[in-house]
Length: 139
Image 1 (spheres, one colour):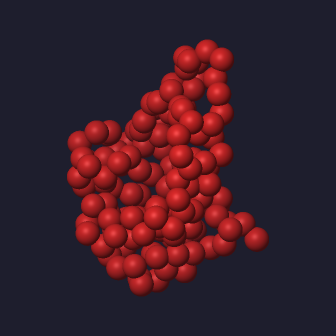
Image 2 (cartoon, rainbow, N blue to C red):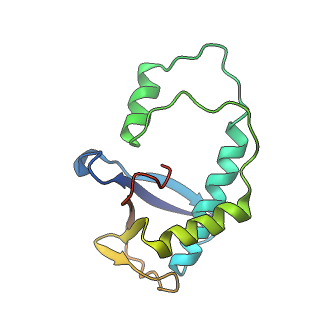
């Protein structure tokens, strides 16, 4: 059974909070802990990255609709070009280490999730917010 969650991604000083629209992510199951949430999102991200990185474009430009859609997510890019696949285990390890090192913070609604073992208290329409605290964390 799949489960949809909504996530906002924010970089300190980059976007106005009101401009960030939640992005839906479809996970295999509802995560019970912060660790499960981070692992599920990372595995999904790796799979989507590996699927789209080799898709070619005939014309390297973005339509107005693509620009608007990407801008609402906080980043505009032309896409990916070939290169090696992302390695799932390495990405998961990096995600968990960055969380423990405080590179980014995770909120469920207004509540900060501070430990990997923390249980997620689900409420109706919970939106997760990821806040990147350093310029070197990669997104």
